[in-house]
Amino acid sequence: MTAPARRGQWAEPGAELIQSGVHRVPLPLPGDGLRAVNVYLLEEDDGIIMIDGGWALPQSRRALEEAMASAGYDLGQITKIFVTHIHRDHYTQAVALRRLLGSRVYLGAGERQGLELLGEVRSDVPVTSLRVLRRGGAGDLADRLSGVDHGGFTASDWEAPDGWLSAGVLKLGRRALHVIPTPGHTKGHVVYLDEAAGLLFAGDHVLPHITPSIGFELGESERPLADYLDSLRLMTRFADARLLPAHGPVTDSAHARVAELLAHHDVRLAQALRALGTRTLDGYAVARQLTWTRREVPFAGLDDFNQMLAVNETVAHLDVLVARGQVIVALDGEVGRYTRVDGGAE
Image 1 (cartoon, rainbow, N blue to C red):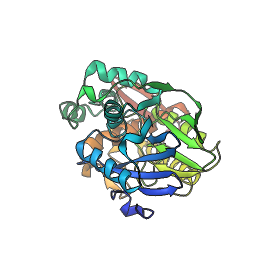
Image 2 (cartoon, rainbow, N blue to C red):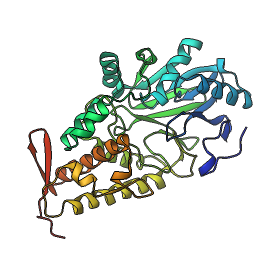
Image 3 (cartoon, helix red, strand yellow):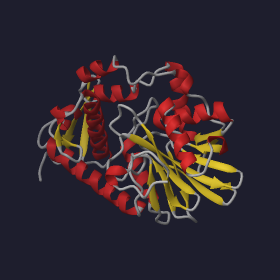
């Protein structure tokens, strides 16, 4: 059992004791800049409840088994797996563990469309994101990305869950988990709040050191950033809790991080508005004027995948400004071109 993880050490293998009966286990994400995904083990009288499953890879299974053994558990004790969303690093190992162990798997009801589309198109190429790229004026980038292998899609890694979850409270032996739909990262993302224990299992909704991508899925979402901002504000209606994220170390206050994320998006909205100035521009042109990541990397310094995320985030911010009446948009073919309502006056 490891000591509490600090910022740079959170991805090290092992089982971190969060509080009595609750452990954090980071599982490897080879070749992914996120490094690892946290799953959480909750001890109950009839077995282990797991929050998120990890990516269905042999090294991930081994890391899970070894971490569980270090905490005095066995893989066969996992009875239920509650997943925050359908991305492969959260969902596919839950499916694999169900096949192996008979564990029951649960997922937010809003993910049904995305899961059905995965089965229909038999690919996890982010087709919706590519359409947003084209609307943002980055057709050449969309063409480059449309033929990229995004890590080896295997359709059988995804199956329907045993149960679809809506907002409400799950009674789980000694523990009660609030299921809270938090659309934004995906349409059906949910978080799980244990109010009595003061723990928020936040998935990718609230991350301690990065801002999650928005609307990264197959299903259509008309207002992913607006949904995400609403979902962040929703967190403040519940009592504050320790933040147990999918990527990064556990931190003391979910509310504090929510406030930082909301402030970050306020800054990005102001930057997008300022970048428009007196001109009419598409999202691609605006994104190229901004810097990216905590290191403020110029747009040209990003690889194609991260340029896609940057353009799509910029389009999402511009669309919020349209909804607020600060910007208007007109379609030029398939490309949206944005103009400030105030003519660019500061």
